[in-house]
Amino acid sequence: MNINIFENADEVAVAAGNVFAEQLKVKPNSVFSFATGSTPVKMYDYLAQLNRKNEISFKDVTTFNLDEYVGIESDDVNSYYYFMHKNLFDKIDINCENTHILNGKAEDPEKECEDYERLIEQSGGIDIQLLGVGVNGHIGFNEPSNIFADKTFVVKLTESTIEVNSAYFPNNDIPLSAFTMGIGSIMRAKKIVFIATGKTKAHAVKEMAKGDISPKNPASILRFHQNAYIFLDKEAAALL
Ligand code: GLP
Image 1 (cartoon, rainbow, N blue to C red):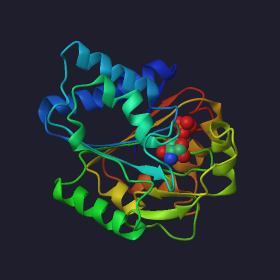
Image 2 (cartoon, helix red, strand yellow):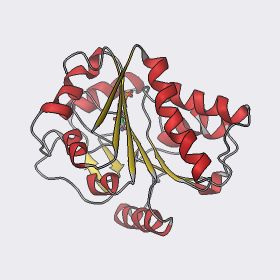
Image 3 (cartoon, rainbow, N blue to C red):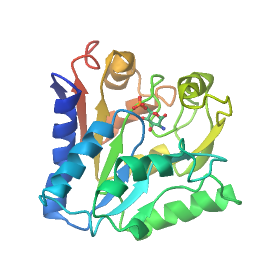
């Protein structure tokens, strides 16, 4: 694990964004897997800026998002589909036909998961997987559990995650389950870029880097990845 600690979240965004920018220079048709949450927003802004200045292009890029709530319409302001378009895809020259996000309203969830895995495989695999972390150590929506899931699946969200998410769902119609790429789908990426900022993440970061490697502490599995780059601000790194 290659751990890099920065002064603040702006510096984290630039350092992590530069990994994607460098990759695009080497392989313009890269396959990226993107994450949602507040943490990557600054990095997406930075990538959009580089794109505007014509320093990088996404026109041949393919993307797969990590996860999506079950039961949510894509045009719902809380869907990850909406998030990705608002925070990145609408601001860059990507061909939206090459962006993939699990369909929260899929009639056959099992088939949705199988199709997604097949698409990832057909794309040649993920070159860079972006990850944030939940306060309970989840990655994507791989919640603390007794097993590491291999492939994309439907997960029941934990109370702690539901509570964190409730801030975004004022009407109390908080999704209780989600689609997520599995730990195996994440670990098969050729490179991992993990970002965490702020003191609320310090405990999860410490557990990831130093705790037991266990499905009860999902992010800890990243210690077994050969090419994982961890970008933290001082607050998130405070307990290391
Ligand atoms: C959600 C997403 C995760 C993300 C996490 C942290 O649970 N499924 O992929 O890492 O939120 O979000 P934030 O960056 O807002 O703390």
